[in-house]
Every structure is written in C-alpha cells, then in structure tokens.
Length: 195
Image 1: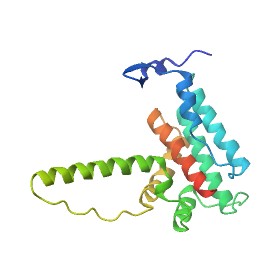
Image 2 (image 1 turned 60 degrees about the horizontal axis):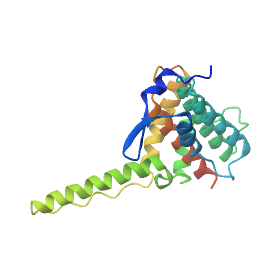
Image 3 (image 1 turned 45 degrees about the vertical axis):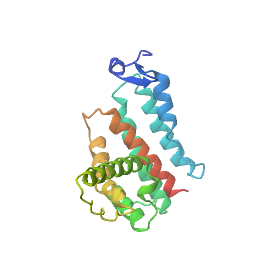
C-alpha cells in the first residue's frame, strides 16, 4: 500500500545539470502550489483540498489522477454555484452555463490563469523570433491582432464541461500533464471568483 505506483518511476526531475528520479516530495511540492485565497468559502476550500490530496495520493495509485481532476472540476462548479447564490438551487445551471455567466459578468479573465500566462509567453517569444527572421530578410512583420482578454476563458467554457463529463462518466485517460493543468486552472478560476 505504501509503495509508489510503478508508473511513478518513469518520471524524472531536471535538477542542476542532470536528471534524478522524481519523488513523493516533488509531487507534494507541485500540489502545494495550488493554493486558494483565504477569502474562498470553507466548503470550496475543503472540496479543493480533497482534489489536492487525491492528486498527492496518485503517487501510490496512479489512476487517482482523473479522480483528482474530477474533484477539482466539482470544486469549480461548487464555487460558481456559491458565487451566484445557487448552492441550494434545485435546478442550478450546468457547469457550462455557470462558466458562461462568470465570463459575461467579467468575473474571470485570462491574465490571472497561469496556464494562459505560459501560453502567452511562448506566443510572444514565437512572434519575436518571426520578427527577427523577417528583419533579416528586410521585411517587416505585421502586427498581431489584439487579443481577447477572455479568449482563453472562452476556450475553457467550451472545453471544460466536456472534460468534466468525460471524467464523471468514466475515462481511461491518464495524463499527469492534463491533471496538473486541470487543478491549476480550477484553482486560478476559483481564486478569481473570490479575490
């Protein structure tokens, strides 16, 4: 019971100038970075802490990762219902409807989502490299179109409900990258709802 799932031995951490096998402490460090603001209501804190703990215990049972993702998505849905005063509603809107309402009311934006920040940084680096290349050719690069400050949130609105439904109705997908991104995005969205 206390032995790591054999699949955990496939992962390594780059440290200094070399790789080493990843440890439970590494996983703990990653999971501990998903912190909700103190202003987030206790019921949501408890739900999200459950997701974090399940993710941590995936060290021993690798298949806990999608369970942690589902719990994180449930925490986000609870946060949205509480934010809109629908936590006791008999027929509350779906996760998609609640996310859409949060976007329309500008309660969430891309800038406060770490995953989006990493994507935006890579996009900017790519644009800069294109500009340098075109300058070498003696050409100028066109200005990129202005970005929608909620463009990534709108993508989440379009995809998160399907992800949650896939997890809730049974999924064979085991992706540590997706699991960490799901927890991080849920954490960032919940924190925006309760600044």
